[in-house]
Length: 302
Image 1 (tube, rainbow, N blue to C red):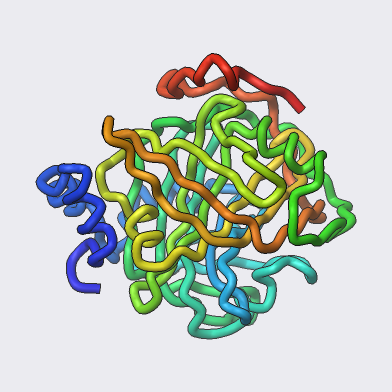
Image 2 (image 1 turned 90 degrees about the vertical axis):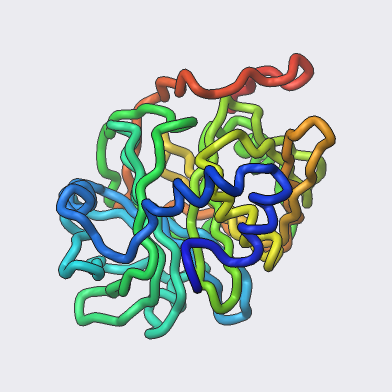
């Protein structure tokens, strides 16, 4: 990819009128892992990875391990010990050399996050990623949590489907955080975070979701990818139980006349799982940056 952005991101930046700001912010994107970033990675107990499976469907998955299981092993390379359990939609992709991946390390304890995108290499203990893009994001819309305990056992995949069950719909409505994996073909994959007050993700039907695109860093990497390629994978973690809800489908951005943006997502495949070795976290301290919800939605609970 020439420069920090491909044509999809540039198109969205122009449409929204933030091209100059995006050019300035884009200077923070590099391929090197600074010492402070390496130290941050070494403290993390989990890593979100986004990629396409063998059928081309986009997914986001969560890897968990003792701090140090993700670490920088070179100026532009990270290694990850272990992999995903059998049945996870990305288990095979993360064991295949050359897979284009997007990763995000998010620390709920400190509201810090770091993204690293690149190409996967298979190693004896797991996999490595040769970095092509490395950058940090601001703490906006990140909920603060503390780790409680590690649960060794897990049933693995407990349900697969093509539509959301009533319980899964309730889980989505109650979510204050999810992750989204996107791609732009030759420009690689990306994994990003979305946060807000419970109810910020709407369930329009068992196969359709929508959420507002809150003001961010003006890069528009996710919306730029969706402009170039509508495939997307969503990951909804249940922080208090450690369960995961993974969705694969297609998304498009709706631009309002008032400058607001909304993303609509059509569900094509659903995987619900309870991985072994999962972390349970405390109830959240919501980000002060979270916008209020429209009165008709309000806050919701599981």
